[in-house]
Image (cartoon, rainbow, N blue to C red; front, top):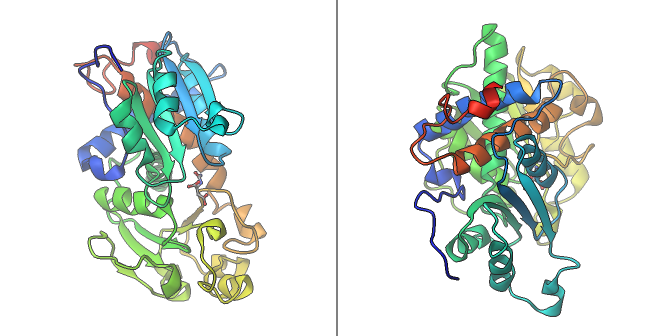
Length: 335
Ligand code: NCD
């Protein structure tokens, strides 16, 4: 492809690429956009004239709509590409597909793909900034950011006001199919970088084969052992589509040992919350009554996802040299 690459081109491919201070900055930036999302007319002209394209090669409801909503609330133009019905059905390659879209003058490509590393590869081919919206079993960085934002909100409620900078000391259990979960990989990195104490709770067959290098406090405990101490329980969907046979005796047995039912929810600490990235399997990892109880922050996660993705899009496209959250950069937000 010809053309001049913008000097300050950035991507968001992995939480591993972000330092604690960058995470803190993005969350603080998302605070400004959460205020926009709460307005009667939740729209600012900040990214007018910019184009954000979502390229989803795998199923999605909330992530795709959340990015598109975020882009629209920033007044960016949006384009939506889905592999089915496209020329990929005629054999066009991923590279030719993304280069074709890039040639139309797109500023940000939001990419979800069933293969780990696909968004990284796309970033090498295109001029646009690339956001990883979930790649195979690898990472889902904006999910981790919105989860951290939601937990920060919980801490702010407890403190009766201002959100703290990070999640220092917060105890979080991530429960379920960690092995196949890109959400778990990104969340562990982000939570630990922000000072949270992270425990993995799962049957041995659903833990990653190797946990060296994972910044966690522990793995493999029973849910009932930890439940009473946790500030947050993060339930993962069983990724049945990624599972080979024999990893689970039965869904019933899994639900009995690792599912958060009403009785277990009663044993949680006062003020402790339940998170889930969605889509939920009610009756498996989470009981329907818990999903709709005041402990559950699942719809709050979805709402916060829009503000967090607005922050990410803004951060990737803000004028070179402006500090995130600076009055200059946020001129449109202040209106
Ligand atoms: C997750 C995903 O697709 O990675 N969902 C989401 O983006 N909110 C989790 C899942 O599918 O279980």
